[in-house]
Amino acid sequence: MATTRRPEGSWAGRCTSATSWRRGCDASPCAWAGCAPRSSCRQVSSPLPRLLWKARYEDLPEYLNNVCLEYFEEAVDFMLQHPKVKGPSVGLLGFSKGGDLCLSMASFLKGITATVVINACVANTIVPLHYKDMIIPNLSSDPGKYKITESGVLNLVDIWNDPLEKPNHRSLIPLEKAQGPFLFIVGMDDHNWKSEFYAQIASERLQAHGKDRPQIIYYPGTGHCIDPPYFPLCSASVHAVLDQPVFYGGEPKAYSRAQVDAWQQIQTFFHKHLNGKKSVKPSKL
Image 1 (cartoon, rainbow, N blue to C red):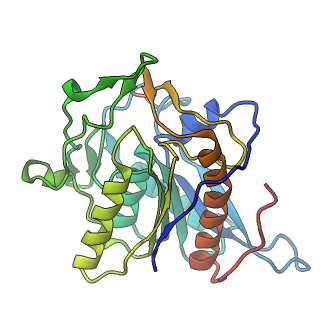
Image 2: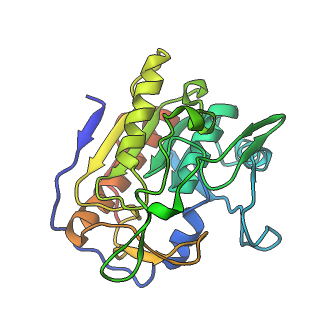
C-alpha cells in the first residue's frame, strides 16, 4: 500500500526554539541531494540539504508579491553542479507554502526525481507563480469564512476555495509532468488548510494520468507544523504572511511521535530515490 496511517504515540521532544527554522521553511523549499563520499575510506553517501529563501532575507523582498520559478531553477542548477553532489538529480522538501512551491518545481523543472511535501496544497497558493511565459494564479479564498478560537487566534481552515471547482482549475499544479515520485506527509489535525483533502486530489490526479500513486503518510492528532525531531509543538504562531496569530492544530504526544517517524520516513524516501538504497540506518536524532 502506498498510503500509511501512523498511530499516535507518547514520544516527548525538547528544543530551545523552533521559530527561526519554521519561519524559513514555511514558504521556502529545501533542496536535498545525494552527497559524494568525503574520503576514499568512506563509501557511504550522505544527504546534502540546502535551504532556499525567497523573501525577508538580505537582498530579497520584504513581502512576497509573486514567485518566479526561474529563481528556484537557478538553485537546482547550482546544486547539480556542486562538487559534493553526485547527481544526476536532486530531491525537494517543502512545508506549507514551500510544499506547493516544491510541487511546481518538480512539475516544471528538470533534474528533480524525488519530492517530499509536508502539509502542502495541491494548488498554487498565496501569490501567482510565473515561469517563462506561463502564469499559474493563486488559489482564491474567502477571508470571511475564518473563525476565532477560544484563545482568540485565527482558524483559516475553511477560507480556502476548492481547487477542484471550475473557477479554481487554473491554480492546480500539473503534478503529472513531474519526473519522479512524491511523498506527502499529512497532519490530520491541520487547521491551516485541508492537507488530507489535497493529498487525495494529488493521488487521484497522478493516477488519472497513468502515473504511480504517491506515498501518503497520515499522522492522527498532528497539526499543520511537523518539524524535525524534538522541536516543541507549535499549535499557533504569528503567520508569516498575515502577520496575525493563526491556529495550526496538533496535540503534543501525537506531534512528537510524528516528528520522529516523519524524519525517518523522509530520509528513507530520499535515500531510496536519490541513492538507490532501500533502507537506511535509524537517525541519531
